[in-house]
Length: 212
Image 1 (cartoon, rainbow, N blue to C red):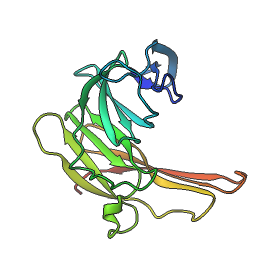
Image 2 (image 1 turned 120 degrees about the horizontal axis):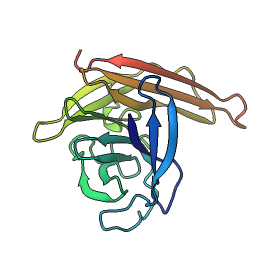
Image 3 (image 1 turned 45 degrees about the vertical axis):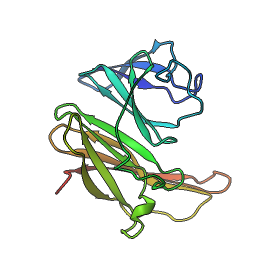
Image 4 (image 1 turned 120 degrees about the vertical axis):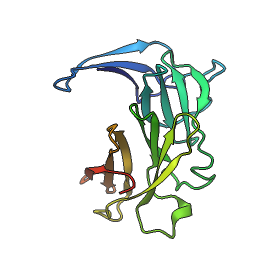
């Protein structure tokens, strides 16, 4: 009922670790504290060279470590609770080919299924290599711990509610593995006009059974 997350602001080119105490019955946040004064560091102990654009975090209780998604590098790396990189990361080269992401739409969502010991992840929007598929077709990967091979599932997003605007974002922003074969998928769309006045957003959460 307590877990660690990462703060969204930069600190020494990394992230600070927060401890969140959540009421297990009500789900209400009881307390937030800085559980480590150390920024997220590389495996060699140095600060990160550039902003990694962290997008999601998943805690693995079996190893007492957490994994961070860096959209900038297209990587998912393991960190100790001190904030130092362990040097381990998920092997994604065969899942997301080099140059496959649309600009600004890299790996966005990460979830860990503790019961089945597998990671789930996807990009925010369709890959450039899937341009021949219908709009909004995403690749959701299940990456088991151990030697089992990753499994690929296709996910079809809703059609966008709006078009155009000075700034428009449409994609999957979060995943949650329930442990019983289901996924909760959050779709998010944001439309911001020039001058920002009149900005609007639409968010949907869908229950999905991969493979059905």
